Length: 120
Ligand code: 5GP
Figure 1 (cartoon, rainbow, N blue to C red):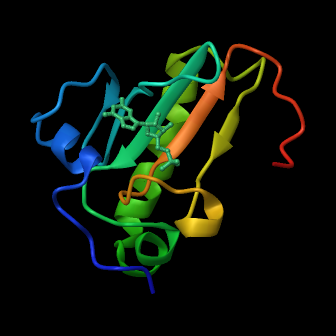
Figure 2 (cartoon, rainbow, N blue to C red):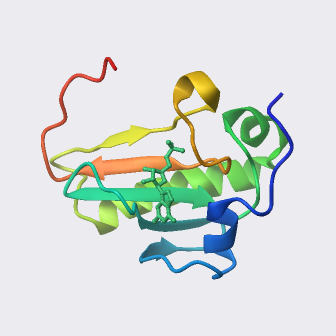
């Protein structure tokens, strides 16, 4: 299991409005905002509104309705941004080896350019 959720992590502060963010989408389950250091013309982070560190506790502890709501929200963001036909990339970094920096589960949604092979 991952470590306990830290309510002082940066995305928790963004959800509480204590740190500003550029909102792209929001619904009952999810909040989406622009990444502060984009690596593609479109680089949005989609996060569940409740606190889960990673895939491990989200998949294990979140109610099915919440998991479905979150996945639907990711799809809605892609549609809202007009990325469905040209395609885009989703990434979820998990834990130390996955390169996860912020301990609130987040999906990177990247688009607006052709993505290369992802082997690093
Ligand atoms: P990770 O490596 O945890 O998957 O990705 C964390 C992401 O959060 C990075 O792409 C980083 O640029 C982004 N990020 C870190 N701090 C902030 C912030 O304060 N605001 C926003 N909008 N993005 C952030």
